[in-house]
Figure 1 (cartoon, helix red, strand yellow):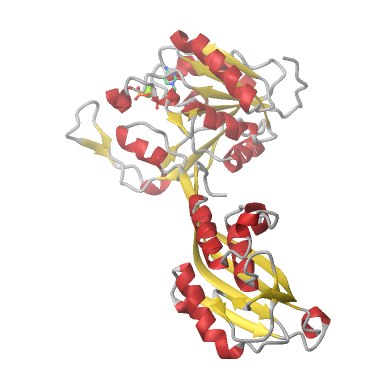
Figure 2 (tube, rainbow, N blue to C red):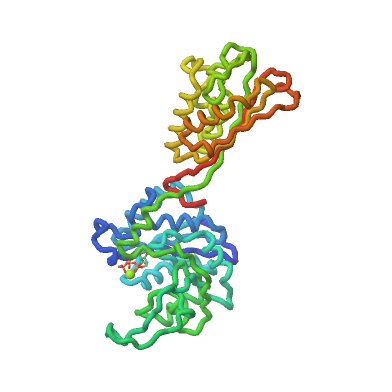
Length: 406
Ligand code: CTP
Ligand code: MG
């Protein structure tokens, strides 16, 4: 695959060659990097995040040797479904994390100047963190790593003896370090060549030992590493709830044969309505607002007026169907504000009755359903008493499965 590399382009290495032994047999023998989350292997989520950042121009996946062919096929089919738009390579890891990093590093094209090394077991990293690391990497600061302040007091113990404390480093100077860790590639390469540390638990340690400047930037609380069984809980929250609003508008012409229905209540008036359904302008605006909040299109798309089934149908019945559809889309209404615009009839005498009925239909307390009415001062088609219009705004919560907060 040929690619043009800019001076500052960075490749990301996704380390996925571990055994996940601390997670234990709990996961049916599947190593944590291959856990299916939102219908994709865990490592793919990090790949997607990197691909969303323009500063990342390529990916290297590092897998256990025995899974190399299987994962090559899987990545090909994942790319076929959601092309990440950047080249990728795949390589076998080693017995330790550091050996896996080194194998990944050897795959980075010569012209690439920067590299980010990331644990596949940290699927929650954000593009903002990737950007920050890429931005802060310079020849003066050849290593940039994310860290968060520690909450607990940390003790250093003597050797392997767990019972005796050797010291307590000041907590304000301590950071829990995460990945991705960013490096100027050539400096990291030479550190690997000259200073292989068997005890290194991250890549930055190699540069620290050689006296290079390693900068810690603010990491992300949510960027945890799936390590022990309890961490799997974090993968269960595969959705989010967001506050949503919907708007609806409808008009009906006077002069037909339908009785005057408003919010499910028959209004005693001589005025008749022209409509295919029961012509309840208020419920129609309300239903459109609900469909809007649930992102389900509009009333006409669900109940076409060409369908004889909906002739003279009660809008209260349609509202039940709309609420059911919205509920399936994760929407729960919490409040509605409606406005009727007409010259005649006068709405005020029926306002409370209509408001109560709307609250009943929506299963909401009456004080969360507001109803207003106004004239247009004799202007326009409402002023000429040719018709009536209604506006509706609803708000509520929408639960979205398989999505993180926007
Ligand atoms: N890793 C790797 N090669 C190794 C060891 C680890 O690529 N030889 C990767 C893991 O797949 C993981 C990341 O490095 O994404 C962080 O390592 P860790 O959390 O320790 O994962 P494991 O080594 O798989 O887990 P454990 O230590 O519990 O066995
Ligand atoms: Mg490990």
